[in-house]
Image 1 (cartoon, rainbow, N blue to C red):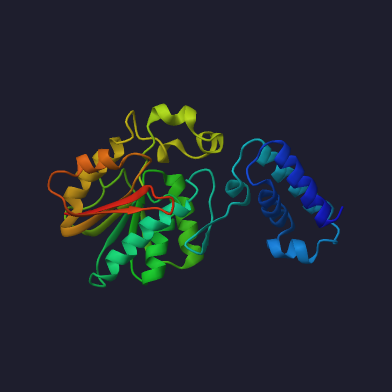
Image 2 (cartoon, rainbow, N blue to C red):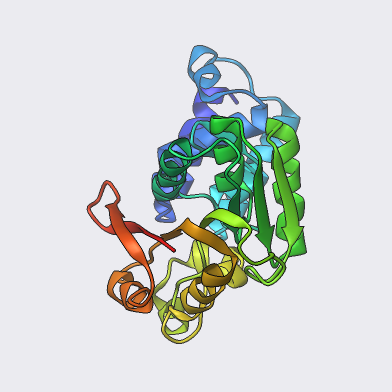
Length: 277
């Protein structure tokens, strides 16, 4: 079987199963099986697929048909032009979260080079590593999941970023008045919304990083309370917003915070909220 035939058959199988973007998914899975980039598939379309690659490709297709996200199959996801290792212990970094990282970088660029940034609920480490790599600065990051921190450490080593990871439930392990920037993409999905989520998300991504109680505001509430303690005077709090969570989060920030900003994503949804202590 040639690469061209394998690609066509894989795309047809995925399309029949109503898997999103079947052609692109087949390309990604086949290139992962052959251990090449996608361009190679078209430049060598007439090449025969080896038996070993066919076995791997068939397994990857089967996993995708069962709902496993493509990123967990390939264990790769790009974030801010960097390749990150991911598995089911961490959320798959979303392009929308790049708006949060950009807001953090913009604020840090205006501050003294010694400003201390803390990424809370770091997961794969994508935000913390991006800040450290883009600005060549030291960043701290924490997560309640030890398994997630192992993934983050792997990405830190891959990118040579100056990030210190540590275990902690939000900011409980952080000293008072020690942080200049607290940045976080916290869990914000209400428990009742689980039934309406994509099965790829609900059944595969870690619930501890997704769900935040009955209203979806419970982690925001704890995080904001903790930020009041650990941020230095004039320090900045930046958080990713969930779907329709802006007004609820804004209400939680109604007392004692100033210099608000709301950043929308490319679809026009409020994605990031920032304020100063």
